[in-house]
Every structure is written in C-alpha cells, then in structure tokens.
Length: 403
Image 1 (cartoon, rainbow, N blue to C red):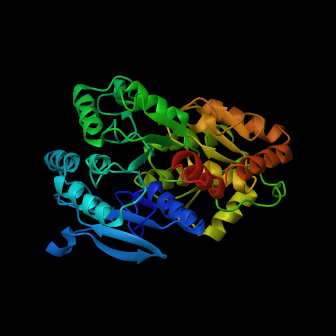
Image 2: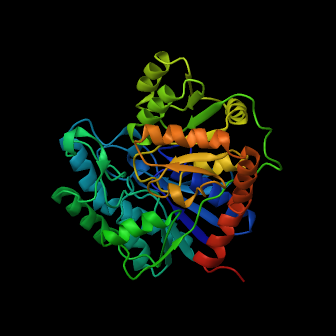
C-alpha cells in the first residue's frame, strides 16, 4: 500500500535535469508528514529480468525501477542518428510495455494519488494506465516536453538567419508530435506547474482545457537568517547548465560593456568550451566549471547579484530560489516564468532576452540601488517559498489529503 506514488522517467542516482531532484525532495517532504510514499521510475537495461519492476530503497524511499523496452535507456541518449532518435521517440510515445509495468506496480501499491512528472523516457502512455485505475492523477509540467521534441520550444534549424528564437508557430511534425503526446497522456485530474506561463502555453496548444490547472511554485530547503554583508567587490554570478539556450552569449557581451565588474560563471554542459574560450578572452570573466557547495556559497557571498540571462522560456529556475535563500538579488531576462519570480526594484531587475546593453544597464541599476533592501526582499520571498510550504500546498490543495 502507498498513499502517494510519484512517477518520473529518472530518479537518483540517475539524473537528467532538475525534475529528479525535485521528486526526491518531494518524497522526503511527504514522508516527513507521515505519508507512505513510493516512486516508480526507469533504469538502464541489465538483463531480461530488468524488464520487470523490482523494488529497492533510495535514501529510505521505496523505489520501483524497470527498463522500459526501447532502443536504449534515456540516460544513454536516444540514439546516434536521426532515424534512431525518431524510432526511439515513437516507441516511447506508445510504450505498451512501460504502461503495463507501471500499471502492475500501481495494482500492487493501490495508491490514493499518483503524481506524474517528466514521462519522456518512461512513456506518456503511463498517464492512461493511471486513469484506467480511477486513481487521482496529478501531473506536473517541468518544461515543454509535451509540445516540443527538444522540450524548450526554441527554433534553430528552421529559425530565420539561423538565430535561435522562441517557436510560436510549430512546424507540422512538431504539431503532430504534440497531438500524439496529448492523446497518450490522457486527462489528469489536476495539472500543476511552477509558473503560470507554462500552463498558459500548454493551454494555447490545446492541452488540459477544462482541467483544473494550478501554479504551485517550487521551494527551497534552507533560508538564511539575515542578508549577507554587502561585498566590496563589484561582481555578478551565473550558476547553471552551460547551454546556448541559457543566454550565455548575452552574459559574455555584458562583460565587455562593464570592464569594472567581474563576471563569475559556474557549471558544466555542452556550451562549457565556449564559456572557457570567452573567459580566456576577457580579464573580467572567470569560469569556475563545476564547483562544490562550499565554493558556490563563497561565490554567492561575494556577488552583488545572480544573473539568469536565458533566451528560452524557462519554467521556474531553481537558481533564482536558491539565490533568494541566501539574500542574493537576481537579474533575469523577461521571458517565460522568470518575471513571475522577480519583483523589479524589490528582489532584482529584468531585461529583454539577448539584450546585452539591457543586461549591462540592469547591473548598473543594481549597483546604484539600495542593495541591502534588495537582499532583504530576496530573503522575504524565499521564506514564503520553502520546500515545506510547497509540500503543504501539494497535500492540501492538490492531493486533497489534508484532514
């Protein structure tokens, strides 16, 4: 038996994005409130036996893992060629084996609520398996994976002049992809997302009309008691994956416009070589690569603001929550769910995506502002958006389990 079953394509130690860590933190929060929680997820192929779900434990959480029959496991990529990738996605879309395997675990656990998250890699057909069993089904949107094969709604190959732009009119193959995802997922009882923007975009594409849809923001685990001391150094900080979609070129260009400000960048990813190259060409740009939590704390303590320069419609970046939790204001691009998190002049500032001049001006405004007040505003925001508050909202408002 289980009160709540969480379903995600991957689960630690297998990691692909922020959803895995979020599901882990949610499971712990629910356990702390006395609920019986189980997780259903996938695992790489080992032998024929790996096709059957087996139970293990991860950090005290019961976890059911199985290999969803396909060309490869999500952690090993979706194929080396276009043909392999298309075939992989086609199997994933209507993976009857995955749906059946999840259904068998649900029959055994008989949960009151099933909360699905990212299903790419374990099949959106899992949604139908939940609904056939008349279990309350909650689905959370972490990105645009139901609408876009790349999950970010950015055009590149089909973009004008080859410049990456938000895809407002998807081509025929992508529209067909979205229709298939919509049909296989079915109709959850409740849909949540950390940003209203992501919900609205899905509505615009014909998803979840008539379904109870709610913005449920994420949460941080720890919030500092007091704002940090205002550092003497003039420095800003980027923390996150190094991808073109994260707007790092705007970050580099802003460094050119503000030679008296040090631009720190942390993290790894496919764009890391470009970041390293940019740092080698600029005296005021420092690339630290992957850093420890202690090093990250030091960098946040010496920075005046965190920079979130994304050019794609981010959902609700955790780096903003984590920055606020230590009293660090945020300067972010005015796109997607980012402006829902930043109160200009109170917790940070906004600028137009790809506008390096706008980012540089926002940084100047920050140094001219009452930085102590910005830090207090950031902490106040974080105190209202803890992980504890997030789980309370899930239990009472979304799951309907509160007594």
